[in-house]
Length: 351
Image 1 (cartoon, helix red, strand yellow):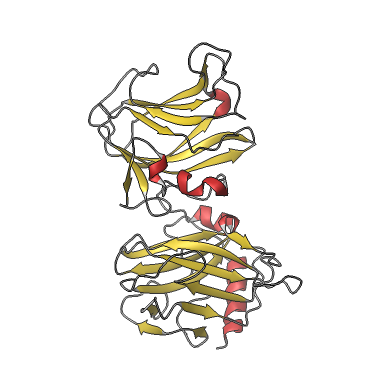
Image 2 (cartoon, one colour; image 1 turned 120 degrees about the horizontal axis):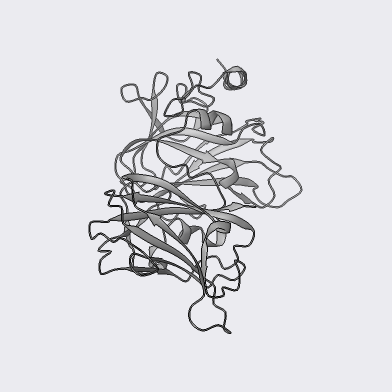
């Protein structure tokens, strides 16, 4: 069966299918699966034993030299979809990055036009990857998601750094889904797609740049997004976390969501404080909220800015000098030395 025929059949299936709650996201008809690798350019091997969908997965090895896996001569209209979903198996958590490139050439511009997502190889075994189109980066002037002519996986170039020869991947299942389909088949872990992450602060807010967070250390064990989460330990003595490289104007947003992992439901409280100094006032000026640590594992914590408290005379949400977290002081009623937390993926909720 020809590739385009398979694509048409898959699109018809997805349009007609009703979603039912399940995890992870699956579909019996892969839109761009790897059951037939004839049309994929690049050196792929076949595995008919370790698979997630269909009859086989594709093995991608020697990524420093075999650095492009691509489908060309496509004519895809993905304007009715919101994300790409695929299965990736990693033999080792090498920390390498893979670019996923959706080519949408614009004849009016010079140079390639495309959308790009990046997958960090920070895991071992199978993981289902969700690539929201809204979070891709547009390079130059792509025509739009209604005009995708090529899809490529790249292990070099595209700002992904140096390929690691120890990176050995298996690829399986490649679907395009709507937000409704994702919501109906959501994974148990917090979603990384709700809210907005200002691009200039992406590494800080996803905690890949942990050095910007005084008081945290990087943790590579199953982050929600990117390479690392930020681990806060020894809260009895290490009772302050400070980030000065934080978005300074939060006035376009009504709130903030942060993914927090807790080792134990200690019932302790932590304070979140947005510093907004007024030079005319005596003492520090800030907005504040308290978060009780009453859960285990990952949880999305959302703060409504309109319901935070404030101390003295903060200038406003349009002037945030820094972001702080505290495990003592700030009217915190309970502390516990067994509290151990991780933070990942801060995003803001537009008004």
